Amino acid sequence: AEEVTAPEEAEDIAEPSTYSIEEAKRKTDLDAKEAEAKKRKEAMRREIAAIRAQFEALRAENAALPPADRLSPQQLELDKGLRDSAERARDKMLAEAEAELAWESERAEKRLAKLKAAYLDRVAVEHVELGLFEPPET
Image (tube, rainbow, N blue to C red; front, side, top):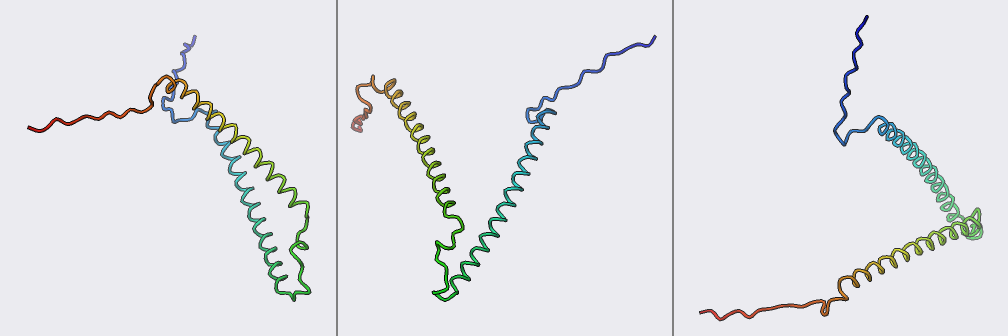
């Protein structure tokens, strides 16, 4: 008969800065997703920069034409609705930000009022400055 021995106890990792296996996997997955997103953003930025450069070249070429042959800035717009759509989206985002800031401001004002009620309303005078007379030197 063979003797069966219990496996040795595994030591726990006591350092809080060390990741567990699952935490390390999550972190590497998150890092990979972030890196991929950064690559896509950078590719889009390069594409937009190239399109802007082309547009600026066309505008310069248009400006070099005789005045009778030039296109007006309105004629250079591809989609007039796109500008309106972008302005509406910007206005909506601004309104949402203002509403959020108004809520935060009101919340801060209420917290300040509560603090004043708790600490200052019971005080007869907020600020008292005490001074002393120095005794004459002898």
